[in-house]
Image (spheres, rainbow, N blue to C red):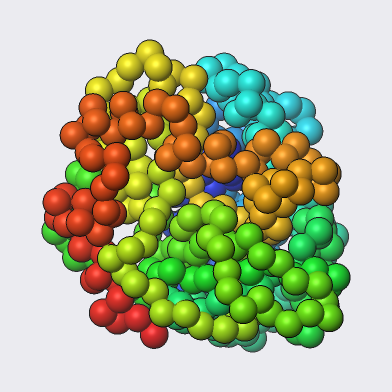
Length: 364
């Protein structure tokens, strides 16, 4: 298993299944045919126990089914067994995951289990064609968000409440948080030259990148006049944004989160750069991966001195556990990869043959 992050789609297996499913789904392939394709390609058999790497295949498959409201009872039970039995955590432990990573993974899987249980109470839809069109239209709506759009998100919501709230167009809450879309890769294609570049990371392909702000506002307050960046650009999965403003993005000045994988690979934005492995980074657990928008409020609270307002472990959402750029070994590791710690990302990406501006040529 190629481990990237503790999120459900934060590894190769679960991400591959999810991508395989969703790509066919939005191409208009019938759901039953997609299910057969997934089962064939990834060897999923509901009659066999989910063990080893197959567990992540099932979790990625369940994530996709939840996204299109087609979760079956059989898949729901398989996911419940994987999580409640502790098999998933045991697999992580056997692979050498740190205690912090295990704690993070436990929080993530419990949140996903809650999502699965909520979804399993609904009947899989029968009017597939009609709902498919509605869902596809909704997906396109969120995908055409433009770089520079400022959005708001609800604070202090648990996953279940958040999911229910998103069904309501005019949902109101006591406090709002804010962020801005930096770029949107959904309908923008990379060329083969970039795809084959060994320093290009496909991990964030077709994602939406955002930054989160420190400022929040109460329900009866105006939107703040200015914002302070609290969380630098992160890739987002499952995002729903309520656009409230606009501020032009200066492409050359985008600052990306830094993460580490496999103890010798540095991820910065789209870049994937190898560096000489050292014992110093063996205990560093800052994995690349997309963030869920349901955690935006926790990220803001954890990094603005409001940790006491978070019910789960606030350390999971703190910048030092999300971004390598605040780590004490950061400068030394970057220098070992021949990277100036004070680099400009746009200029750095050009050195590796990846031009960030290409993503803005067809921006909507």
